[in-house]
Image: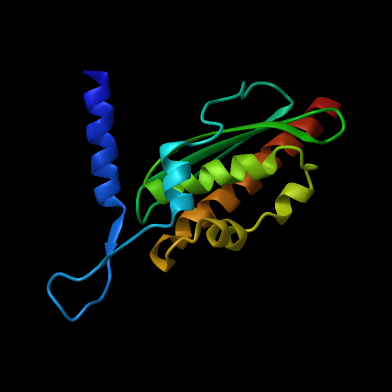
Length: 160
């Protein structure tokens, strides 16, 4: 039963990720999202949650009112300021999930300040996001900034 449900969901999502191209004929070619988006949607990396009460964990929660996407991204930072783990939960389209997945992969191993150099344009370029989905990569960048800000606030509070 579960396998049938998963197969149905994958089929539905594959159909949903197709964008029609402009053609003069009625039955023209269909343009699909880039394989990077589909890979990160079907095999998202780092889905889950970290202990938001921990002083070593920063949590960023952002949303896009225009489309209803909501993204929670968390980072765990060691005593040297290096991100040792990153998790996300995203409720939204395939592009939002893929953007979150890529962001969490890129964060691991980076210094807390260096991770702020990850820009939405880098994520969009890597995933080959279509122009109508650029807001998904902007959400990921905003979530990174929010998680870093949350972590830094916790560190200031802990040292006070």
